[in-house]
Image (cartoon, rainbow, N blue to C red; front, top):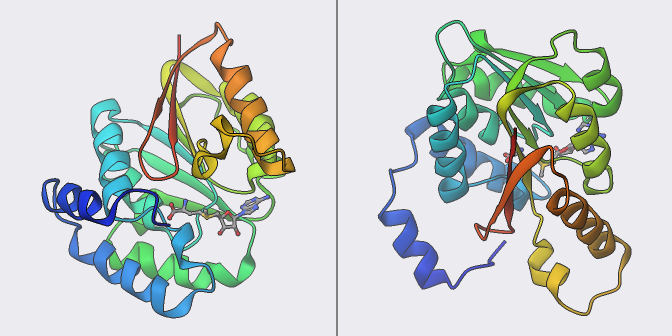
Length: 212
Ligand SMILES: C[S@@+](CC[C@H](N)C(=O)[O-])C[C@H]1O[C@@H](n2cnc3c(N)ncnc32)[C@H](O)[C@@H]1O
């Protein structure tokens, strides 16, 4: 997904921390073997997720939409001692790759992988004290995921939602269904007084929400 000027992207990539070796390998393999490799967060956004996680030092993380596990591993970098990531992926065919990648990155003991539909699984996860969540699955359900997760988030906890600028279409004239769903999401979060919010123009737009 080339959202930024490639020269700017290259400059950013070379002036943030390098991509850890295991993530570089997962990135490479994803581009070799997956049908839609650009769904992966990638180097720069991955370093943002890692940085936010290290600031929060979460005990409990929730990820909605695991794909090949790239972002799960970035988020796991900031886990507090004894902490855990619940991650959810609907596509059963990703399970083997996910387990292999978590092992490669040495985080498999801290990851609980759920295969199935996120709405049912979020509802069924017994914990209701998440410190950090990353919503990055089927875009039409973003608002539902937010509403389910905010009730399971600690005060001061973060919820991060990906792709909220939707290739810039949210502030243009586009009238397609997906763009309208993203506008509705951003509009509703913008007036939600339960939370503080900031859209970062990183990649396709990363919405960082903090529960008051
Ligand atoms: C954009 S990719 C996730 C990328 C990953 N978070 C990363 O940054 O590397 C979206 C993933 O969500 C999964 N997904 C779509 N609908 C879902 C659902 N209802 N429940 C759980 N996962 C879903 C897709 O199969 C896909 O693997």
